Image (cartoon, rainbow, N blue to C red; front, side, top):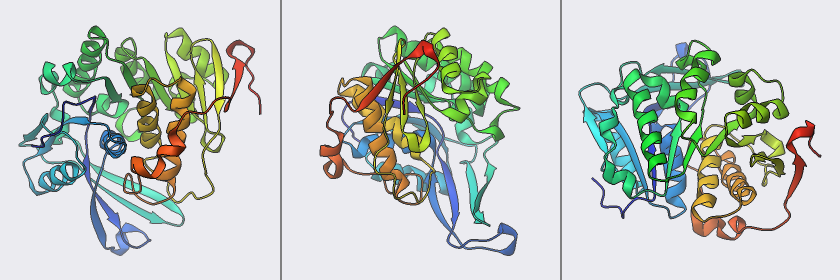
Length: 330
């Protein structure tokens, strides 16, 4: 166990062992792989920890060699692992390979240790010390007990006045379709303060066709939302207006994996510092841009000393439009 200071942020979810190829080509041809760790919530946690924020990561790992590798890797990044349980079920595993300019993924996660998550895995003490809770739709999909854990943590956070940030992180392989995912998300959205998503996944989940319709749908659910729009940056909807926040230094894009998690971490960093939502989104763009410059889920995430000046809030960097007119400038 680590001896991190009292946590300011708590996140719950699965981290898996990733076998990442060192060469390109079809997996059937035989390849060499490197062993790494990967998971949306741990990507988020590592990004925030590198910005100097104490983070508790709640999960279950198998009582196996892969679980040992992941535990020590996350421990080395300075995460608080006091709420990590070791389970008789195996640690989740997935393969990634690239062929013909496309990436493919093969998961071995059904029945994994993290799918055994239960609400009791998150003690009251962990929530009492938190200033923000981060949750994703991935954990909702792992099992009924994992879904109950997400909903219960969000509910308990709301009763304590702790802001909840939710990223749907829609993974088609985990659901029968977007309707099933959206129905599961509805169970937790009543406790969510900020909803962060990509435009494509948001439209897919809520049956909309553009950002205006998506914001209307999210507004009817009482949500403040940030929608990532790729090279156009991010759109921040505070409940009344939509503001476009331009992207940051996107001339070097190597790998998009983990960029959404990096954005969420930057946005959360701004919330913790009580910045305006547009400044939070700009911080998200800054961290995401750094993640895009290299390969891997989290390895190129920056440390605070490298980007502190870039994170400082600046005025008048966004364009504000009225939510109801269905248009935005640009």
